[in-house]
Length: 294
Length: 312
Image 1 (spheres, chains in turn green, blue):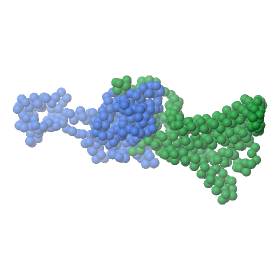
Image 2 (cartoon, one colour):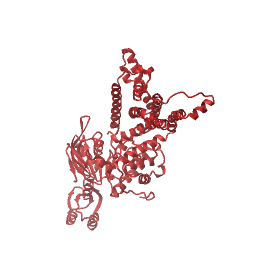
Image 3 (tube, helix red, strand yellow):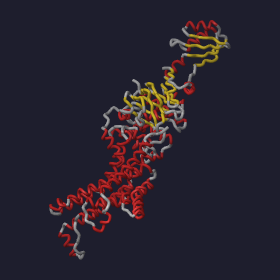
Image 4 (cartoon, rainbow over the protein chains, first blue to last red):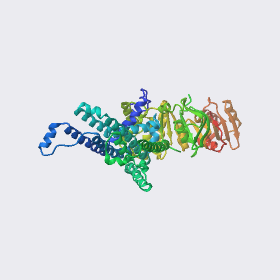
């Protein structure tokens, strides 16, 4: 029908594939996230440390630049690009990713829940699992763009500028950063989606994302002090991630060695439990809101 | 072909049976779903959409099993929920396009059809406004637009006239009739308002306490009603009765010049007027029997549970 005719007619073309519809959910979610200027500002801010660290890598691999800096009285830059350098880069990017997540996470699900849009969305050929996976994929893509992607770009840059042997000798940095980021992405995405599905107000949801990460950390610290143990660290997400990251990157950090006492397996089990709890909460909320109850 | 087939369908929510052994087949162009609060109307709609798995029995929409083939069913169904159900910070056109793409329409066609649907429901001039700024009537219309933008074979409308003023209600009813008369789409309309169902539907399913109280073919009811007539006359005696009988009508006379007639299809009202004119009889009042939907509904509510099939 043409607009001016204002008649009703059926659709007789070919419907799109199942994968395309999954992509539709992602596309509209990404567009909604980018519609905010704050998202753009945060995203740019998240990339600034990477640019600074890339500049440092360039300087450390370029003798001419080092001589120029020294000639201008800046002193000779004196640090090495090693595991510790990438550990700092990884940490910085991952904590910036938390800020970005706390902003965009609540936009993804809360916007569908605030006006009860789920019954309409899920009455289309989209399952609850596909809906959650699409939102998760959007979160994961945003966090990826500020975590493992810039860290691996730095690694590639260093590999390109340094002798070939450096890259082969430090491949564990790339693997470790990738794995560490994947754990962080899964954790952050599920926390953000679960929180945003339960908290209707965006600002409160943003605060809740931070609270979910940091409040248990404080409680774990209190537990450790009272019980004179270290097992309270299993609810201390920042501490667990810190330990996991430096173990994955094989960083030699004597001054942090006191934190290196919990088994990696125990920390992974704790993180899996936290992720499972978030997935359960998210599923319960979406399931409860997918139908109009009469 | 039957639109909806129910075969001993039982649905439990939280362990409590909400729909209990529903059986029946519905094939009308527009099917009304009636029942008091808590009778299971919304649960039945949600079950047909595949949200609730049957605890026992089966339900089929266009011969597709609601549990096993819910994705195929949702492809062919448009659903307008009862309550507010939209993304408030989206414009009307953006929301309808989004829903069209989710229904499986490619993006360029989805945009075109979204514009068409918005104009069709009468929101063409406000289609770029955020839905959160719409009035209640506009929100109902945008829900209707998203439900029919992909040209579904079955349009499920849950309380479509909820909260509408008389003008908006009349407009909604007219749109529903248009869609029904287009012949492309069948409708399942759930409503508390008997008048809405009466004006739009040709078949009605009445639920009571999770069971079918009645399945009624309104179209046949109306046709039957048209043949049953009550007359109030002055001076109509046995010759009038004989003349009417000679036309093929069954009739009975009552004191006070009252007559009750059942007319065959070949007899028209004007034949009665001719006889009255020839015999010098005044016809002072003529009533069709009005076994209205309200009567059917109240009878169904009063009856013991069990399928009462009226006019089928």
